[in-house]
Length: 360
Ligand SMILES: [Mn+2]
Image (cartoon, rainbow, N blue to C red; front, side, top):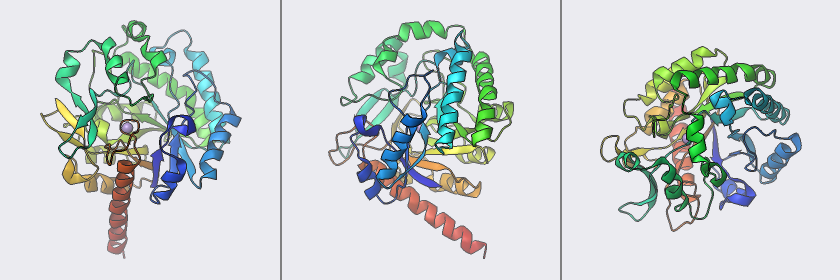
């Protein structure tokens, strides 16, 4: 595996590349071109400029999160083919820049959903949290305002103001889209882009729905082992893979994380590792520290499953808590993600050394 950290670019991130490098545990950067709208082509020189920034800091660009998919592609609208053409051109330019992992999602209207961005824990740290009662009583159009007022003055990916101003229109756009239709549109998209992925060896890594169930009545298709099986079987190409986002699949306690990793052998191209603490079954949970004992998941078992299935891609500590008074984008401070990276590297080293000594 390659230990990485997500970085929001010079203009938006409170964390610098130099700070990330000094963590020592993190060698790779996951980033994107934040000025790009879905459907726009990424030019080669723009990609190379991002790559240069990262390399000048002594790090490497391990992949893109995300190249966003337009609503026309997700809904099968009139501009679908035009947008797919632009997407292919972008992939081609990424391939030319020697980038081989692209994360994306196929979620309608809302990206990830949380009801609190700064829930205070007993020790004074704050974390992102989800409460189903809040969602059940909320008008989806108010969701954006609730998120916006809690962003510490930053722009959260997936919650861009330009997009959220159009929430009503977006719901209208998806009104006839059910799970079947969404799967069909995803298949159409993947089949169209596979040739360019084959040519440049680009691993596509779809991000799961977060939380892994339907919110506000919208269809969500990347949420369980059965649906993941359908995804990888419907386009049987190794470049059609997934982001194993543990904190997203894990929101549904019925998802067996270790079994899911094993089932996805060879098709996990990117891993987001995070722990959750459940307070009221699945109706209320918060993003805990990475440490197994602070949350619900057995982090060692999941890392071991990744190791045993031969995972070699980029991995990143997912959201972190806000600790030591840091002011940053919720979930994306430096300190707790660095602690997470150190912990995950420690687990990996132990697992690897143990496996090698057993094989002697
Ligand atoms: Mn994730």
